[in-house]
Each structure stands twice: as structure tokens, then as C-alpha cells.
Amino acid sequence: MKRWKNDKKLPGGGLVYVTSKYDDAFSTGLLHEINILYENGWEIEDLMERFKRPYMEILYALAYLADEGKITRAFAYRRKTNDE
Image 1 (cartoon, rainbow, N blue to C red):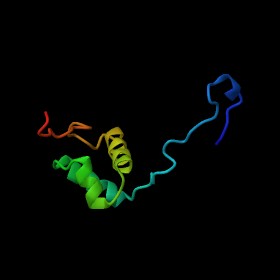
Image 2: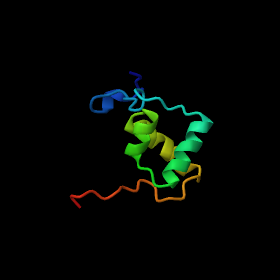
Image 3: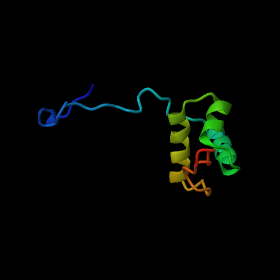
């Protein structure tokens, strides 16, 4: 764990790299396919199953695409369940 100079002032000290256990690299083709499928109504869970990637990795890809202005569908839209 990397540390800052002033870590002694912080409770617990040090930094936690919360994304370190996930792959944050995507091919251009994969990002394009995720973009197309998401725009056509696929949910994060559907994309997870299709690409065999964890929730957080799909979320990273969607966040990147949204930041690049490539997503026009409402970002983080959630489908309704029977409980709602």
C-alpha cells in the first residue's frame, strides 16, 4: 500500500486502490460492442453474462463511454423488478 507524507494525520492512514482487482483495459472493438448493446437496451447484468466480466468492469466501460459522450441512453438506467 502506498502512503502519503501526511498519513499519520488520517485515520487508518495509507491509500486503498479500489480498482486494482479489476481489469480496466478494454479493446476498442469490445467498447464499441458494449456501447451498441447498451444503447439497444441491454442491462449491465446482460453485458456481464455476454462478456464474462464482473459488474465493476462493465460499469467502468460504461462510465468511460459516457464520459466520452458515446452513450445517449440514460446512464445507469435500471430495469424495474417485480418488487417495484
